[in-house]
Image 1: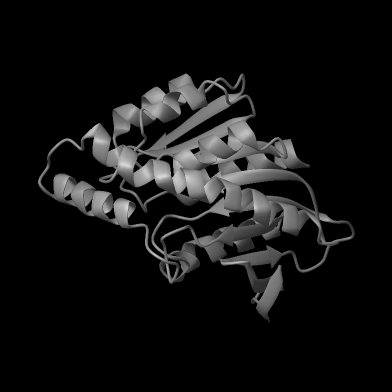
Image 2: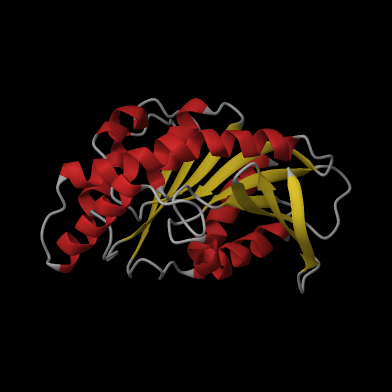
Length: 244
């Protein structure tokens, strides 16, 4: 892991950009800590870190007040990373269907989401290896964010993740429902009821499929970016219970 820049944010949080091979990312660590900090992996939307940065940095600053370090990465095919041609075509087909008010075919969802999951999850695991080797980072580890299928796969295959906050704001391939049944860690799922880019019923069905004994669905009215502050606070309390 190679750190390429660093700055102190207004609340003293240290923000460092890094690269691990071809994977760019950002690490935020609390202003002061007497012991290695527990870590939350912030799953970004597939928009590119530049566009998503304000939301991600706000979340990082918020949980840093509770002593958590956070990290995010640029997803495959996003930002300045090489494009994934099949996913790009599927993304365009998905946007056309949504704009026309038409159902999005399973084949389009599969072509858009599954290659992203297959590439992003091993990258997250490699980044986690590097982060946990830093003296200022300890365990346990949580995952927070979307794409929800990435969080689902990580919850199944990565034993170092102890709890997850999942954002139900992306289309879900049918194959992920079987993986969801294998999830056993505590879950806190955020759902925006009027999310224009989400299949609400599929999100509810996915929540039902999760095999976790402790799982909470926090649904609020509003569109994709309208998550109320108190919902974020509840997610922070969830991590405090399970990671401290």
